[in-house]
Length: 308
Ligand SMILES: Cc1cc2nc3c(=O)[nH]c(=O)nc-3n(C[C@H](O)[C@H](O)[C@H](O)COP(=O)(O)OP(=O)(O)OC[C@H]3O[C@@H](n4cnc5c(N)ncnc54)[C@H](O)[C@@H]3O)c2cc1C
Image (cartoon, rainbow, N blue to C red; front, side, top):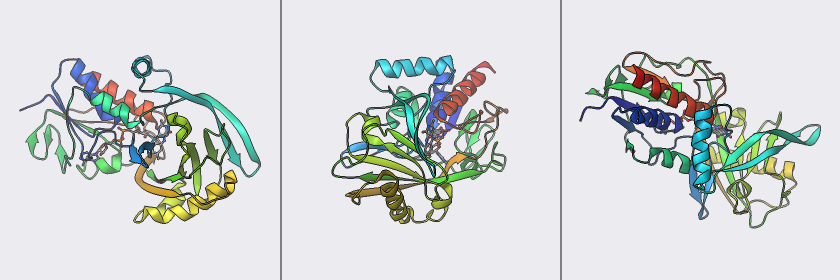
């Protein structure tokens, strides 16, 4: 069946785009190669509970439409304010760092993507090989939207918008201990100028179940050494985490996930790319790559498609 819009990519930007276009009366289909929607909003069941292996949290920001969506999630128990205070660890020691309220989810961040996908025509396990204006894999597709990192979009077309941006990898390592061995008010820690790790999140705290699980993000430099073998990053991550948090034992269980395109090193500054038949949205479209940027980019592109 012909559709008005085909969105390639079922991360938060693609789903926000699809929802906005569908709400304005367009027929929309979302295609994603993953087993489930969410992309970098990635929660995986490890050790009998969801662990966030992609984005750690989100910030609501200035956008009233996004704040409205978040209020709905909060009302339905899908998201909750987590903390406005992290620890900053540097060569000079540790200090509390205040910032905007960070939001977390009881069921893992992917649950928000699942919520956005509700009622949409979403086809998972569907890898798109090639796009051109108005066509996906040679079939009529209406307006085509590429909602993914530029380097992934560049595999599908030689005219992928945003393909010129550089992206950095991250390996996310989940570590489970049999008991909690770090300060109860750790919540999260930015690690400055460390060769191996950049961020530590207390997954039990953000989830609200108190589990003794940390998720640690490597630096891009460390990740580049292990792109073909993400588990190879685990020893360096364990050593750095134990050292910085003063944890006596090795973790009981570990798991590593590679993000080849975790974040763009710069953003385009434009809210989205719009051209007849082939548009693009995602976290590189905006001023600062983040969950809220991706949602806003997709939402605004969806409205623009409906308005044209
Ligand atoms: C380790 C890590 C930590 C992060 N931490 C934070 C944080 O704390 N706070 C924050 O705000 N943001 C964070 N981010 C960024 C945030 O996750 C992203 O900004 C946001 O999720 C991007 O959404 P998106 O829809 O633009 O892209 P994605 O989520 O990448 O979605 C792209 C989708 O396209 C699909 N796809 C790709 N190629 C194809 C194809 N050929 N055919 C079909 N489907 C395809 C993929 O399967 C994927 O689902 C983090 C990201 C990472 C990786």
